[in-house]
Length: 269
Image 1 (tube, rainbow, N blue to C red):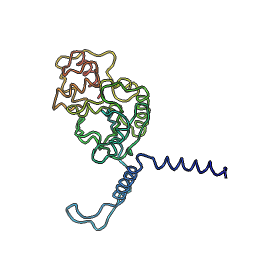
Image 2: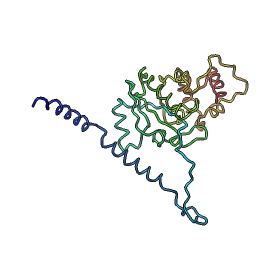
Image 3: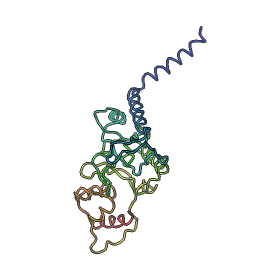
Image 4: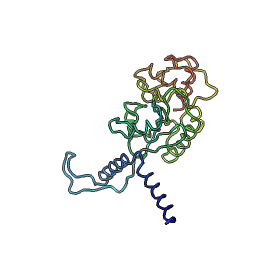
């Protein structure tokens, strides 16, 4: 009789682990929604409903694939724990999500297929692009917005970015922060975020060590626009620029040193 006890106990433990999965039900919803999308994509476009003369029959082209993300937007969660953020992203009423969540201990949660559109950027603009969600991958870092990021967290983030850059050929300049694309609304990631370290690994640009003298007549607002900032609110754009590239001074005023950094960076874009 004893020889049956261990297998029974093992089965009970496994069954308990499966039944205690905290996101079992929301995962079912994910699969259901994904299946509905697959069904709509698999249908050949109809012949009617476009105006003009109706075509005689349906024709589906043989030359297509999925759209690829071209930007990575980095956020901090502004919440108190990774678990709290995960729960936020599975509640339908929150209407917010991200492709990845990186916890303080370096754990990476991949919450949405990279080819699908997450709801992370909100109302945003970068250059002429106004629908950031449709072209980007959103990464949330567990951080309350007032503290440094852990070494484990940043190491995991860099590994993840290496994979994303390789998989989708994302340009170096297209790794940016939420504050960069929404300067009037968002302050993330905070001033502790190591943008310089990321740039050293090829994720985003950083000013050169030797900064050239700013030429006479240099237009700072135009330079911000060249980089990608929405300068409709120039004060907000300056603050977002300094949050990313200066970090030690977040005042809404450009010093001569700031202008030197800005001039140097504008030539990289």
